Amino acid sequence: MSPEMVIDVGRRAVELVLLLSAPMLICAVVVGLVISVLQAATQINEQTMTFIPKIVAVLVALVLFAPWMIQLMLTFTREIYGNINHLGG
Image (cartoon, rainbow, N blue to C red; front, side, top):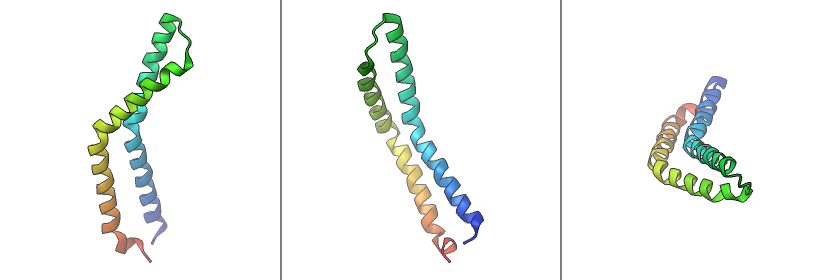
């Protein structure tokens, strides 16, 4: 197994992790920003007010994007298993 193959597999794995986590992170950032603007407008400075909407938003994003995420993970896993004879030794 050449160093280039190791770097390529690692790079693709990191890209996949970033791609899979992006919908939930973006959703949490948007909800946090909206809650922060509302808190600034109403002058309510309750720190715990942001947790429940963020959790709900991330769970909704996870449910919405789960089929797409599973498909990406299955594709990557099938590629790794398909190339296992080239990766070993």
